Image 1 (tube, rainbow, N blue to C red):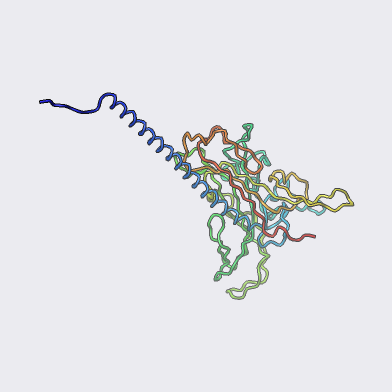
Image 2 (tube, rainbow, N blue to C red; image 1 turned 90 degrees about the vertical axis):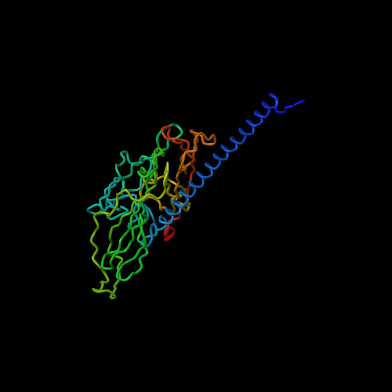
Length: 368
């Protein structure tokens, strides 16, 4: 009998193994590429959701600045509204030396003693920064020369649009989520809200140098906005003597986190100034954006503030590893600043700049 056997030759087997390895390598490469692409897309989606939601939340609150105040012009002398730039203790508060004693014109009642680190701040307006829950200027960025940059702090105040809820005044909620609800027998409240960067103590274990944008809210009472109300017992008189507040209640604590994973927070003030070329020519109106420090460096009376620009550098939740599209020395433009991530901070996150210009309520009136 002639028994024949058939099978692969050694050459055929080597060719088959080679083709199999090539196909397997291509599949693995395709899987890794798809995994990286999915991680990038997820990071961008999380980043945009976090930043855009938080920014929209902030702008709604800031638009309430100067709500229900008696003065349309917003500057460093506006009382009960606008941006809180000065207190009675501030070195750069406007004073009227023609009165005796000298009259101070801060943004909050002069009887309130408030630390400078709880006012609106930027750059190196203060030589020394605060500690704890105060403004510390903490950030994760530096300029192009490698000098560390400080983050900003924005403080605004407003009189809520109160409605009657039974025997209470109802003003909605502050930025910490606290209900603005109190008896009608009490004086109305001005609410003060502070936006600043702080260390995120609730961050994930895999996150390095996590910072977050937080809001700290408080209030002080006033008594000159009441009207007569006989619907409650006892009835409220038309005028209630106002007791001058000496502090802002619940202000200066850690607040509530609004936007997580923020490396830099920048604030610019949109101001209007009228400049006359000569005594015989009319003044020309100019608009410009200034940092809080540069605005307060202007000679008093300082120009009116019409808007606020907010800029944030935010990052994704998870690191993208050795993704070539993410570079350690990448530069970002945050409003008027060109920044890069500090060398000590993990650069392998997706980062994006988000910004918003907010026109201030009731800031355009009383013009000649």
